Structures are given as C-alpha cells and as structure tokens.
Image (cartoon, rainbow, N blue to C red; front, side, top):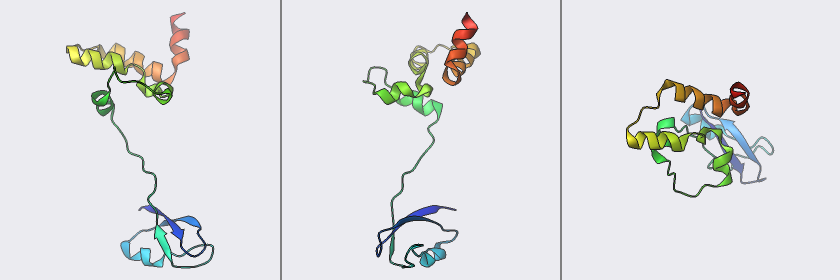
Amino acid sequence: MPIYEYQCRSCDLQFQWLVMKREEEKQVACPECGSKRVKRLISRVVYHVSEQDRLDSFDPTAPKTDSFYKDSRNIGLAAKKRAKQLGVDLGKGFEEKLEKLRTDPGGVIRDSE
C-alpha cells in the first residue's frame, strides 16, 4: 500500500495520498482546492543495506566524510574487512564486542575499568 506524494497543478500544494489499487489513483484530488490536476512526485526512498553488503563495498583506503564517522554502524568495518581478506574468523566474541561498541560505546569503556 504505497503512499504517494503529489503536487497540485492548480494551487501548488504538495500532499500525500494512500493508493490501495491502481484504479484509485484517478480519485486523487488536492485536499486544499479539490482540483484533480495533480502530478505524482518522485519521493525520497530508503533501502536496507545488509552488513555483508556494507562490508563488501567498504574501501578502507577511500577518503571518509564526517557522516561516515557519525554512523556507529561503521565501527569495526576496517577490522572485519581485513580479517575477511586474510581469511581469519574473528569469532563470536569479536562480533559481540563490536555490537556493544556500536550500540553503547560508553558501556565498553565502563566495562573495561
């Protein structure tokens, strides 16, 4: 059940509309002025990238932006990538510690004191 975004060609209002069936799209009307002269907009999309895909596409030598360092999912990618290249299994303990670092970095520091 997609929620599409539209723009009214009469009053320029942007709005969302739930379309259950393709035929229902003919019923879309501007909530502001009631006009049926609307165009569907291309909306922002989000897709899930698996940990394996992130690891496969990670290039440790590529320059990193600030957003890379702000994303906690990137903690440990370099170590995991290198271990994979060397054919080394870092084990369950590494994965657990990595998950702890990603979700509660302060907790790792407190646990080591």
